[in-house]
Length: 183
Image 1: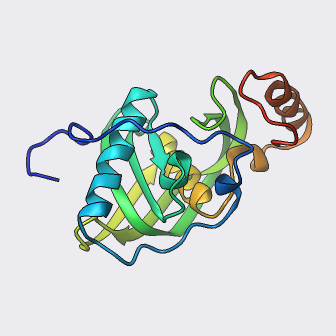
Image 2 (image 1 turned 90 degrees about the horizontal axis):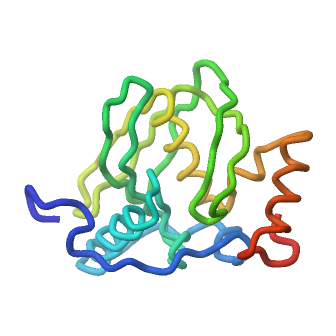
């Protein structure tokens, strides 16, 4: 990404993979090639995330089973965090567990109360291979945990329990984009 450029400005919007697509359920592969293809993927992820009005997007949500995600997400103090992480590892998830509304671009139009820690730290690399460590609190911590889950083959619906899970399962089955057995 060129210095001063807007993330995604040179990317292409890709179709989103929806719940029921097998790529969302498989752990993603580590990135080994930090070349121009990875830079294009990051740009495409930003372009797609912005077009879909999301706050985070993992590579498998556009059909690429690689350990990469992007974000443009506020924390609870309204501080905006913008970036990407390649080969992320969630190294800390602690603090208070809060249940809050969570949605996903791969489950369009739905959300459910999901429990997440209010603090998270992710370590990984940039698209150019530089080490990065990202700290998140509040809503941004939720985003970091959500995107790391995606790369492990987990969607937020897997973390929803009790009546909230039953309601979400019914909503998924009625959604226009739903596939049989998606949840």
